Length: 250
Image (tube, rainbow, N blue to C red; front, side, top):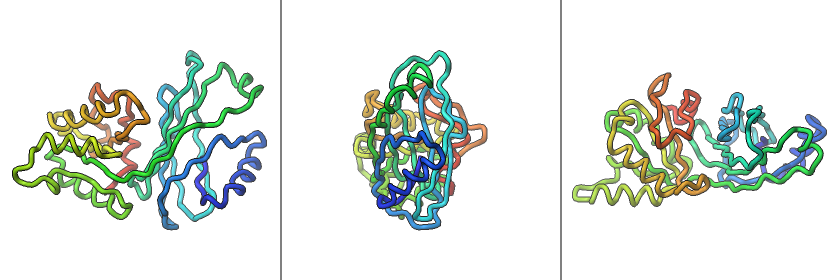
């Protein structure tokens, strides 16, 4: 996977083919954000049902083409099907956007080489509005992190900052979840035991309605461990792993 300024796409093609003569461009998507040189890009690859070795990679942005590589393996018993993947991008540990895409799993490597490489279809999205889900006991740890969202133009809702006396608590909370495109779940033992956190998680899942491409993007942020507390059954399909500590460091 390559990160590059839009004007340097031809440089990417040449560099990719120098590394692998059989390389084929399968798609390109734009995250509409400006990145300052010297910032660290952290790139996480999520491919449900496939095994990814070192799924979190990073690079220093120098305004020139740079690549990260992922080794992805399909289990021997994996069915031939489309796999919906996500590339999540963070700048200096702050999630700023993602790219959703589809990969086709075929029977053998030989059968893929024999045919034309299908284009990787999908879309890019830059986050604009975040909902902060957390347990009250974790408030101080969360406050240190959410302040990092503002420089990237990401508005966020956090109850202690945004709720006024007399507000209808549950209705406003659900309204904010329905309007966000990024659901940051600050995960800890306290969050796992919180009735309100789980209500918020379920509301976000209802909004997605089983569609991985539908908003909001649910991003767990581990603030306890390692090891991290186990995820709730509702989120067993997401990755709750120590590697997510790469995101949202205070």
